[in-house]
Length: 183
Image (tube, rainbow, N blue to C red; front, side):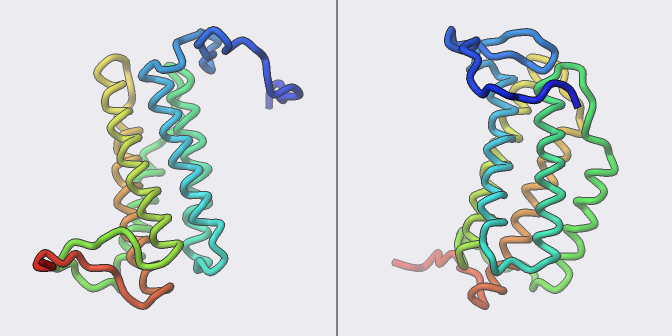
């Protein structure tokens, strides 16, 4: 590993710019920074899910691996031209998705975000991943972004949806179903 951070503040960003992993400087609100910043936010939201003690071990294991993947993905976005996300990462998410989805009943109605503390946090993480996907798509219109990055985020949001469904059943025994005829 390269240099470790021994001092957290550098003052180099006081002018509204930030350094990318390749040493170049960009505006803090550039699309690239927005994209990897939203990936970082998604990673933090997954950390909130993991902070709930009652999470089943298989979900904890899966989401911990995802956090490492998201750190790699953020690095790929932070270093133009860097490649970190491989197709086997996406394949792994699909396997996890299929495994967690196996015992769930088919969807017949829309589900509201909720169902317990961990499930609600997982739904929030899912929506942040969707926003990260939109930010990366916007970046892709301006600069080169590999397809695997978008594919990973797309599968991850699906995985988080399924995990939220599983967690709803673990925490409260049911999901919160949207009532279209509530009035």
